[in-house]
Length: 438
Image (cartoon, rainbow, N blue to C red):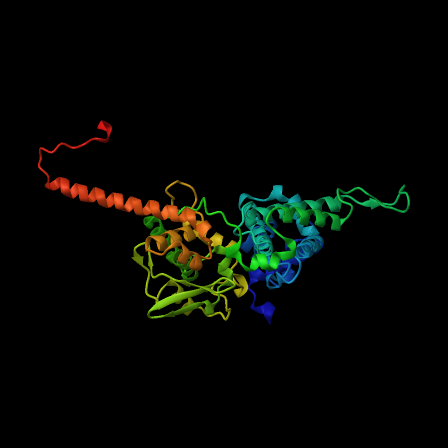
């Protein structure tokens, strides 16, 4: 019955994946795929155009390729180095099972059309993102310096594919070996040695990382060493542009951006938010943030503009629109809690067409900086803001200076307006003073 409920396209993709993986693309005919899928061969060509078009679809639509090799819910239940070894070993085992498909993707790439190549690229990118989510969850990279998780995952994927290709073209031999030790012509003594080398490299990317204390380190993301020196708050017009773009992107994205700008939540804290984290009535809206559930107000006013009320705002609308049963406040695929990687991807999509004052891409950390600066300008002192934000007083100091600069600018503009008003009432004979004249 389940097979009957699948569309003809999905049945063709599943059949092609099964045949390509077991006997290779070259040995598989379109008739074989159509027969296994239970559809007419004409349907295959109508859907995919050619066998290579079908291969490209397999790379973007085969569900098995995009499942996490391990359950993200188990992250933190094992030592990080061992968890990485298990993860990488499972990735290599998957490549072993898909060896024929991998050979086809690499060996027949020159025969793909431009559209097929783009589809292949999207498929590889999706696989990379799945891997990045796991590595980020394990290594806790979202608030740390260095390569972003997507780049780390891309490098790991390239290394795994390279190892699989090298391992498939080299072999060990006992001919001429002494003391019964096999002579191995690969670049590593064995697969375990390759995995160990890769694990060592991954751990070295995080200088602050302590393998024996990763659970505690990851449990308090707001307490991780952060440098706020380069954080730049956003001006009001850009903030409102971002909110408008987020609104067009859908309920969840709008609610997410609203929470980031209205409560200053750190990216690493978003996956920890649950439906029960949102407490609100007609007089307040509070979020319980982080592993220790610090209370943070969710502002209805952001940069001088009101975005609803405490009981009717982008977040409450998102919650009321949901039909899933996940306890997570924001969800990803399969109703799992959203990952920091996905948060950054949504932010990049929302802000793609919005220019910053400097012309640089808008950074997600700017939402937290903007909220902190706004709270300071509203009169909150740095010690109280430290309690709400989870940042230390020392980490807040650069943001305090930015708030002081904003306040000074506002005062200067006010003085200029007052001067202009006074000048209009002054005698026409009063000379204007030029800055060039000193």
